Structures are given as structure tokens and as C-alpha cells.
Length: 367
Length: 122
Image (tube, rainbow over all chains, first blue to last red; front, side, top):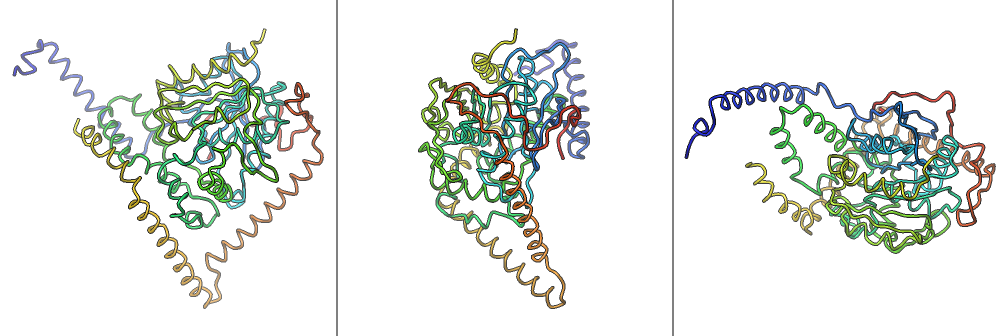
């Protein structure tokens, strides 16, 4: 077999060697920085203002760059999951749902749940669905001057959004969009199955604060793909010379290991109502002193499913689109994973434009 | 690459393993044993500290829970008072939404918004 020097011209060989040496130097530099923890990724950088807060919950309104006016109404309210950091929706410049939506002409708000402690251990589904969300929506309306809002929920945030909209008909919601929202908990993975079967006692998971600790949450995600870290490190080694790759990797890894404790009361309710009772899949959930019916969601509704989602598999999203009572219902199945729906090149090129298009079609253009 | 090849074999196998009854049994057992060990250790240390009339971690936790419970009661009462004073909105199905409520319960920040140039909350 001919050697490399026989295949390439002398100049090409020199260029290849120079490139490899440069990459080795960069690899060493980035490797040291990564191991030493220097130059950590900066995340959640889109400028914002806190326009409302209640207890540890904050409502953020994102500022617009010069020459980028709002072109569509109503504003969008992003609702995140309770156990993951909200900055995944604003990960890095060029890789941000918030930045994308602002560029598309939408007015963007985000609800950040904060980090729960002993006090929040008593928070229930009702706290989020009947107290925080309706008040946050009112705050968006007051701050923006809009009579209503497009609610956009992600993962467990989608579940809270659906229940809140269904159970509070007075909420001024124009449209409801949910991504990767668990509905049929029979298909939610091994930890959910263990809860269903009673193999894990709920008291054994909750810590001294009354919440499910962040490292338990992290472990339950990691067990879904036990070898993910291995291939992730291998990719990092392969691309350690590439500054942009390393920054993106660090940002993503930081988020994937940066979970939030799950309020204990809400966890117990979720385990009883959803993991064990699977009530959401039946379209009715007992919330507060009444039964909330998903059929009472009558606003335009988009259900987004990641076909490669291993955290909320397509089967777990189930028949959500058929459970709501909206006349205008669409389901969008996209070739993306759970995080790939919002982060990465695929999100920028495919998934976000598809979702933004639906919102645009259900919004009014400003004159 | 060698790691990719290994992952192609190990990945699906490990994902299958964590979905087996055996794995679930092990996790359930480990979880239960860890919980019992923690409770036993707490009880042992509590007895030791109390022999010297000193507070144990469980005493501090109980106080912390009581304070948290009080705060939750205050929050509940505040919410009930707010709900009584909130204007009644028309349901979505009854027609177009009325103008936004003049008072939004929670802390609204108008002209004096907390400006954060970016970055993650602690």
C-alpha cells in the first residue's frame, strides 16, 4: 500500500504536518483548560430584564437588538421543565431559542422557576398550574400590553402548560405549543417503570430538604443512555483542537450536569397521578378540588415530537394531540432528540423554523 | 474509531440491561438499603449528641421544616387574600379577553426593571 508521502505532494505533506502540529498544540491547550476548569462556558447571555417575580420564580423579558423590532403579536412565554436549567433555551450566541425567536420578530418572555429549597418542597402541581402560571401570563400581558399570550412549554413545562390552560379557562392564551411533553408514562423509561412498580419508595428519594436532589435527577437521566458519557468524551478528544466545538461541548455538558431539585410534593403527585395512575394519558387529572380535562384546551395547539427523543420517546408523548379539545390541532414530528429540538445545528436549520412558522401562522403581523 | 465501535456494541446492550427486571431489583434494593442505612446512622448520631444535650442534624432539620412550613402557610394566606381581590376574567370561550388586570400579584417591576446583561442565575 502506498504511503502518505507517496500519495501527496511535498507541499501537501508539509501542510498536513503543520496542521497536525497546530492541532496538537490547541488540543493540549484546550485539554488543560478543560481539566483545570478555566474558561467555563458562558451561557444564558441574551440580555434580559426581570419584569415580575413571585417567591423564587422570575419572569424574564428579553431585550431586542437595535434594528430588530417586534413584528408579530402576541408575545411568546417560554415555560421550562422544573428539573432542568432554563438556560438550555438560551445556551450560547448562535445556539439559542430565545435569540432565534427574537430574530424572527417575536417578543419573548421566559419563566424561570428558580432553585427550590425547603419552602418549595411543598409546591404541588396546583402551585405551578393554578398560581404561578396564570399570574405569570397576566404579568406578560401587563408588561407587553398584549391582551393574550402564546404559551410555549418544553418537556415537563409543556405538561404544566397544558394542565394550566385546561384548568384555568380565564387565562388569556392565544396559542399553546408544547415540545417533548410526557403524556403516557408507561413509556417513560426504566426509572419511571420502577416508580410504577413500587420498587422505589418515594421517601427514599427525597432528601433532608424535602426535595428530590439534583444528583438523583441527573442519575435518572444518565441511566437512559449509560454509555453516553463515553462517546461524548471520545468526541471531545477527537475535536479538542476546535475552540468552537469545545465551547459548545462545555456549554452542553454544563447544562446536562446542572439539574435542579424537584419539589417533593410535586414529585409525589407526579408519581401517583402520572407514573402510577397514568391519568394524563386518559385526558383527565384531579387538580385542586376539580378534575381538569385536557379536552378543555380549545386554543390552537401544536404538539412537537422528537422522533429520536430517548428521554420522552414518541410513544410517551402518546396521543396528546387527540386529547385536547382544540379545533385547530397540529402535530409536528421532527427528526431530533430531546435536546436536539432546541439546541444545535439541526434545531437552527429545521426544528426551530418549523415551530416558529406555526406560531407565525397563528399570530398577527404588526403594521 | 475504537470508541465508536465499542459504543455501537455496548450502547444498545447497556440500554437493554437498565430496562431488565434484574436491574430494577438491584436499584430498588440499593435504594432501600441506602435509605435504611441513612436512617440508622442518623438515629445513632442523634442519640450520641443528645447524651451530651447537644442538638443533632435532625433537630436542625426539624426546625428548618417548621420554618418552611410557616412560610408556606404565609404564602397560602397571601394567595387567598390576593384571589379574593383579583378581578374576575371572562373565560376564553366567552369571547375576547378583557384588558389585563390592573394589579398583578407578585412583584412587578416597571421602570425600575432589574437589568441583567446576561449570564446565569446563581
